[in-house]
Length: 289
Image (tube, rainbow, N blue to C red; front, side, top):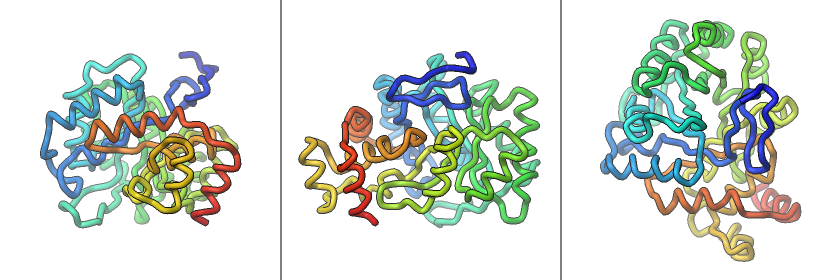
């Protein structure tokens, strides 16, 4: 794809040369309970990944800490050799201490990031990772040092594009002073818009904004009095409405919902074709303001 690639209406261009549909798949929850260990249904997890690709999803997001390592291995087992247009995005810079602790300590040391990236390459069976993201800013390591290590890996041909995750506007600016950042992955949904200022920078500068927890840990997918009425008007589920809101909120947004269910996956993908009016978008935002 050329550097001046143009995206169709349901897609965006990542890093100037990767056209990705604006409905990705987050592979965190394909792992075991507490995002730790092997899934209860390994074949089922791989079936979800294959169905996502069959439905046209061409960005799968993961991280070395998911499992840990389990999610990346599942992706390779299910999808390798990869379709030519599939973008595998992974992350390094967080470590795991156990299941369900709720604590994922950051580790942004250059030597750790190098080892993390090289481990991801092996598990994903790749020579180069399309999008490698700093998973979190380590308060004990200047972000300039962390990004500098990723820039070195990029120069070695191991990373195609760089992204950052869980950053503030200031941290994003500091990262961009060191390397070419093409994406941000922050938590964002109609019910959680704390990263609004980061989204505005992404939209202004044509960076992709990968929204994690776009359904607010499922809170927007269940019966919701605030969403039910508008969803019914569009013959949609509350989850589809919440995802469609993101797609209409900004052309920079690329939600990455995850699921262990093929049925829920199909429902999420169908949300990309749901049309909302400006009044719908404004009304939904007001409901959660």
